Amino acid sequence: MSEPDNTSFGVYKPVGHVVISFPTAQQAQAARAALAKEAGLEGDAIHFMTDRQMVEQVDSDILDASPLVNFGQELNLVKAHRELAELGYHWLIVRAEGDLAVRVAAIAKAHGAERAQRYGRLVIEELIEHGTDLPQVAESPDRGLDAQTPSGQEAERARLRPPAKRPPRDAKR
Image (cartoon, rainbow, N blue to C red; front, side):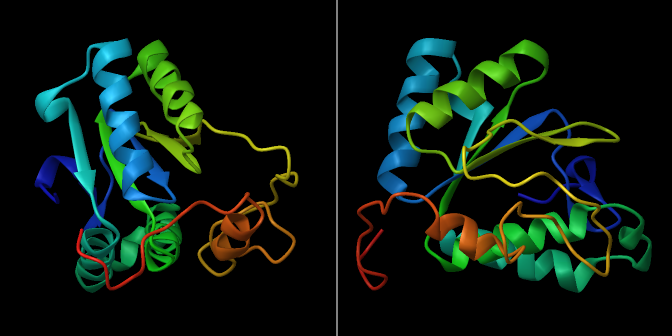
């Protein structure tokens, strides 16, 4: 998925897209179908990634990252993506900007999405809020991404949600 036009300092940054995480592949696929039906998004406008693909993407990004990546939050964000992927989360990367990005996030949330981040040139915006979110605090390369949980860890964010039915880790995908 990494191409020169969707990376920043060697780290995945798909400007003009919404990156959405789902607890299960089934939820991601249901959201994909809903995005096609309700928003007319199909084909190359939506890219599906498994948990394993996201781990590979993040590991590649970390190896390729420039020291300059520490000026932004891209590296911390991909590390948060890896943490969710390690928990079995699956992903949709949807080409959408402006009001369409907000609509995409609403459709995704209705299908169980945990996070939906809109990637702009300078800002990455979280489009899904949860009732258990704590107020955001300062983020930095040293502190990492603020998961808005008591521990500050993305894994805790996933544990705060009602459990989703997940296939066993060794099940075929």
